[in-house]
Image (cartoon, rainbow, N blue to C red; front, side, top):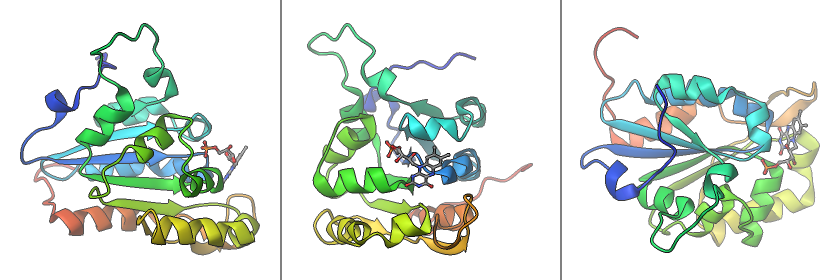
Length: 208
Ligand SMILES: Cc1cc2nc3c(=O)[nH]c(=O)nc-3n(C[C@H](O)[C@H](O)[C@H](O)COP(=O)(O)O)c2cc1C
């Protein structure tokens, strides 16, 4: 089945559904995206859309996300060309649609961009246009030394105190690069659980 790449919040938003926007950025932990999406879709009245930076697409197969019943939106969709006044603007439509935003994983680069207010791609334009009332969770994931870099602490402070996002993790473990220490993304099941608890989601009955 070919899924349409046009997105209009008014059409896509269903009363009573929980609309979850998963943002993936260029950290290895993006490989968990298909698992997060499939697991969230095992709950009743849940819709998931995924917005990915170019780098994050190296770490998972967008086809897997589509097979699970979601879609992956990229800069190419934002800049499809031929814009006319009145056409939907993807980053605005996606932020209108979202009940909750998960930035999982959040790379050092995107973290820095958020802290500085940059909006040079679909992910960061969407975040700059997001209503402050939309709950937004950041799950940093990076090499230990990137995490321990003094700028990371400053970016996290701004993201927490000024931008008012909730920062969860990172956790300590052996990272994909072989280093052992803080920097890994919060376990994907714990990320799903945060949303389940927040919206009191009910698991669908039937086969897994
Ligand atoms: C194989 C590979 C793994 C990477 N892993 C990470 C990572 O775990 N965390 C991170 O912050 N950056 C990581 N990077 C670097 C980012 O992908 C890079 O900074 C990129 O510009 C991030 O762009 P984005 O924030 O737009 O996704 C990795 C790069 C490569 C090539």
